[in-house]
Every structure is written in C-alpha cells, then in structure tokens.
Image 1 (cartoon, rainbow, N blue to C red):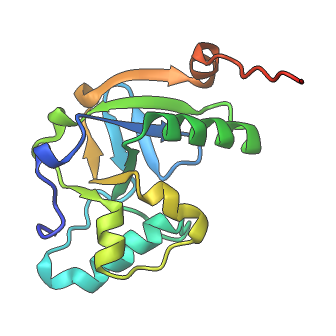
Image 2 (cartoon, rainbow, N blue to C red; image 1 turned 90 degrees about the vertical axis):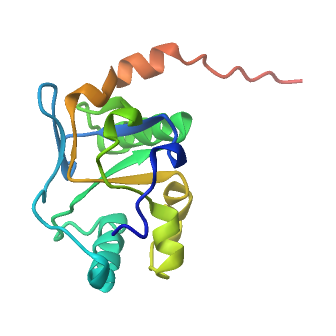
Length: 167
C-alpha cells in the first residue's frame, strides 16, 4: 500500500511499543518484533481488504491474525497505556520498548489516523485518541531497532508521585 507508506522523514525518529503477554505481536530479544501474520501482502488493488485489515487491527479483533505492529509517537501516552494495562489486567509481563525508526528504512510504516480518515474506517470512540498517536509497522521490526527495554517497575520508579495539598 504505497499510497499510505511513509518516508523516513515523515516518521518521528523514536517510537514506543508496549509489549505484553497476550499481544498479537511476538517479541524476542534476538529476533525483534514479529506480527502474527508475516506472509500477507496488499497492493493498490487490495484497498478494501487493506482497510478491513487496518480496521480489524485497530478494533482489537481477536479472530484476526494481524500483519501490523502498533507503535506510539507519544512516550507518556505509551507509558500510561502500559501502566493501565498492568493495573487493570494484573499483567506483570508488560515491557516498554523504545524503537529507532531509522533502522526501518526498508519497512512499510503507516500513520493509523491517516488510514482511518482516508478510508472512513470505523473504530471505537475510546480508541480514537490512541489512534491519533499510532503508527503501524508491517510484519517485523529487527532487534537492532530496539534501543531500550523497560519494565513496569522501571517506568514507575522514574515518575515523581503527585502531591496534593489541601487549603
């Protein structure tokens, strides 16, 4: 889908990934990140199917084996998403990954919001704020692109607790 593919200069240099146990993306330190479906490809004639694939991915359709790996451009948004997942689902296996997008020059990368808007896709209202900061990488992110891994403890220990004062 060249019409949505972004050039390196259109992508923030660093994007963020929240990896968790039941994710539809696998992560290995020595192999990188891999979508569940690494074989499916779309061309310009497959616009409807491509739109359906994006919509199903963004709607968290568990029956769909996705070709996409979701990344966020806003670090604090990604950290908050990770901490919410950790607290709501008691997911102890959350990992925060910092991704160097310069290592993905030969990969298809899309801006989720652009595809949703252009193809008039239907996504839940609750997901719309997330989609505005979301990028989709097709199939694979090599291990060299993973600059840093952090645990929930790493993220929470660097934050300063909010202080509330009563007048």
